[in-house]
Amino acid sequence: MRLPLISALALACAACGTAPLADAPTAPADAFLANIAAHCGKAYAGRIVANEPRPTTPDAFEGKALVMHVRGCDAPTSRIEIPFHVGDDHSRTWILTRTATGLRLKHDHRHEDGSPDATTMYGGDTAGAGSATRQEFPVDAESIATFRREGLNASLQNTWAMEIHPSMFAYELARPGGRLFRVEFDLSRPVAVPPTPWGW
Image (cartoon, rainbow, N blue to C red; front, side, top):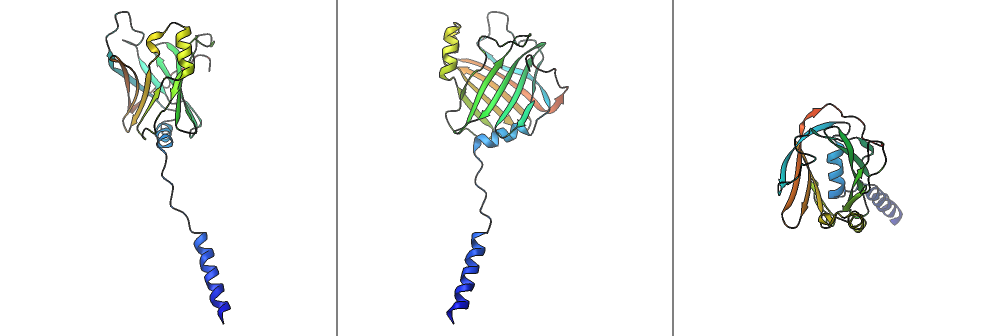
């Protein structure tokens, strides 16, 4: 007489085992990439909102048209490429890559003939979880070695950051001692897609 009861319990447990599990919370790094990937294929104009202390020599960014283009989205959950165009200078591409612990930011710098700049691929990995809207990238050991080799000692303590909100994307560079450079892009108004960056 117990057999039907045991069979019923077994079927009930089997049904429980196939019930869908609650979605795991999305890691901040993944949410951040997804927020950027939503703009794949689009370009946006930016403006400098902080450049402190003011440069004493001609600045490469001041007075130039600044455009970001979310271009490399073949694998948007693991890698996104964002060329940063400064006037007619198409040498810079930001590369965001998902790592086992967070995100990596690298700066791909090329010359007009496509060859790599001496400092290309500098950047760093996130040291904390960050958030879906802001990630910070302290300079890594490889980049410190590159900066020392090239005599760029002011960059040895760089921390880069990126932010993304519904209507704004920001790129930021900060150093101890008060150095702050920040560009904000208006995501509410796409602009014409710029040329392919040099070397790509």
